[in-house]
Length: 385
Image (cartoon, rainbow, N blue to C red; front, top):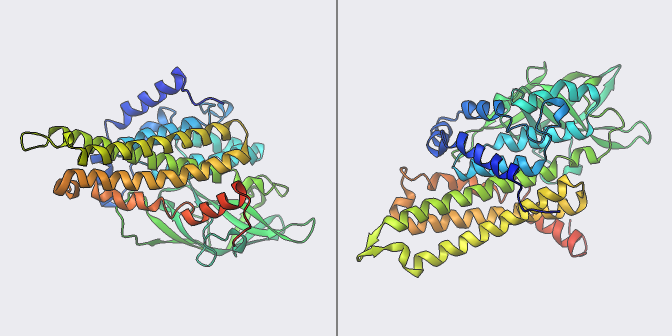
């Protein structure tokens, strides 16, 4: 396993910067304040093949891995234009279908993931389940050749712009009669399916939704992977989710530090740039070190995942997600402090990124649950929950 990037990977990053650089933070902020998705940038990245770099080549994708997809999101975020739907649609949903979908499902959906023309949301969290996925109450039952779903989901990202929602439910395992997780691809306009916006007090272009599934009828082909799909099908998307969340955090940290460094090089007090003072320079240097260390863990997690080392990737992905969130929050705080009042001004756009960075401590998994995972699986301590 190597995280020394190839010329192709370096060229991918450069090409992404060329596209996203024409949009940048001002474009992203404008759309976020208006509650609008960054549709134009999404489409251009999709047409260039960058949203589908991890989709197998036989379905029109780049045939690469999560490493390359995370690189796309990191570079976008480093220019102040992170896209949460990249975490949800190609990384979670695309990966699950590519690894565990039937041949027909792959043919139907993967080409759309490859060029960005299909957007799929992901519904797993429930009002009464939270981090306890074993307590999911959305149920799917057989009715002839169809499935009928009933339940609720909350904090589902981007449903208003999605063509489909990948719903995590529970159904009876016909082999042993026990409930087991199962995933269904739900077209957004399906009868019995409704969604309602959850008003959030952060500035972000993608909205959050509460979902209602009342006797939603789906054909048997909506069940991802068929009736015998293993439990691993669900977890196939969760490690990429954590890696991609880390990519946003690392990119955001890079953006904040770069903004502050440019500022403190030019801002003069007492006849010299304020960046010459250790009280300014040292916190920025420390923040840079922390972001780079998080970046290394993110790249390691992605490389392990692409190598098929799922267990090791799980540990690294959780570490990357945890450290990335902490590093990005600190980088933003240090950058704002370095810039004084200007760090809080609308002109420089750092203060409005604090809410998005803070999400990293809560989602897609809380830092407390990450610590539980590391304590149990890495240190061998007794399970605490």
